[in-house]
Amino acid sequence: MAKLQPVRGTHDLLPEEARRHQRVVDVAREVGQRYGFAEMSTPVFEFTEVFKRTLGDTSDVVTKEMYTFTDRGGESVTLRPEFTAGVVRSFISEGLSQQLPVRFFSTGPLFRYERPQKGRMRQFHQINMECLGIPEFQADVEALAMGHDILQALGVRKDTTLQINSLGDSESRAAYRARLVEYFAARAENLSEDSRARLDRNPLRILDSKDEGDRKIVAGAPMLADSLNEHSATFFAGVRRGLDALGIEYVVNQRLVRGLDYYTHTAFEFVTTALGSQGAVMSGGRYDGLVGAMGGPPTPGIGWAGGIERLAMLMGDLAAPRRTISLVPIGDAGEARALVLAHTLRQQGLAVDLAASGNISKRMKRADKIGARAAVLLGDDELAKGVAMVRDLASGAQREIALDELATVLVRENGAG
RNA sequence: GCGAGUGUAGCUCAGUUGGUCAGAGCACCGGAUUGUGGAUCCGGGGGUCGCGGGUUCGAACCCCGUCACUCGCCCCA
Image (cartoon, rainbow, N blue to C red; front, side, top):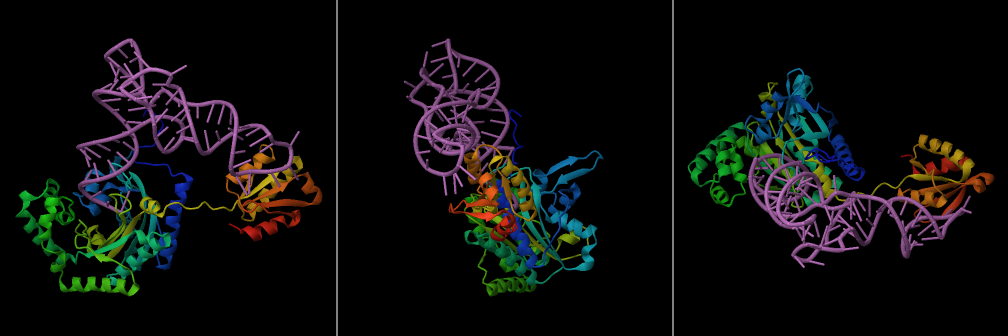
């Protein structure tokens, strides 16, 4: 540690960026409420087993990206790399299967030991939703619509494309996987090294390969859509019909897959080309097999997660709120009065800055620099007349207001909050 | 884990073939302006040139190592 610096892949969230994050979370929480989602949170770390079981022993996240350590009691615990595992664990440990369906919204930091790059950090943040207990496709449509609404409210929906696909139910999926492995195994020597490794870990991922040689082979591979049984095909058609009915644009991407076996039916991603190679800003899907796989009562589920850093980057600059009232006292009497006035106004909900150093010019400069909406001058002249000089810093207009009406007037004109 | 690029003031960067090369703009502080911000002008503080080693009479500049950042691969939000 040559200099004092944050750990690799972590960042300080200074006010300007923190404000953007806050906005993403506020919008997601608000829209989520309209869809019946209640906020809940789970611990930032869990027993390592929780993630191993949900993500699978061979997934990249488990094999090379987890922050795992042994605590003083000898337990292996892991900083959460995603939300779903913890939320589902909570669902099971709290016995929530008695009150289906449940809809949870969560937000907070996640940790993955990866090489940092644009839109990818070791500590990052997501907004997350999970809906448990609804087997019908309507829940998928609602999940998608909620994501769409959030992106729209953030003003970034236009920068994204919604890609959807269906993995089918477990029967369809198993059948497809078998056909796919057979197809690729016969051509294994022509596959890239990466894809050969994927063949036994995560064969569906080969469909996604960026390698040119792989792409040629993939072009002739059996299509997932052809392996869907009747129930799965009907389900997927229902999802698409729902999106059409809501006027939500999407494209079907047959290469869009999820590696793990408990994922079923709908898989989707809102992707952008504006963020380099990290295109996904929000993604998720249905996981009807997960709760059962974790030892809970078989329960269907669907959820998604959105990357706050990525969404914040898409949003661009956010104007700082300009609502502070700056008190500019002149002289001892003014300062004494301003101290009390500042307290009174703050108690009534106004943001107040008290400029207490330097001459009047310095104090006005300070008011301007912090972006105050108005400056309230309190000098001997004003106090003698029982007024304060209120100057609008945007227009420069100023007027006298009686001291005993000041709080009322400022609150009325500048709101409480 | 792999590949490439970049590290000079708080920020964005300049620095000619190694020889006043420690600079600019912005920001910050002070003054012009002892009852009025934004504009302008003047002045000022601030850098072990990421860090360590090497080559050389001499290194911000060349070499090696290291750390960090950025971009890409893998994977993902």
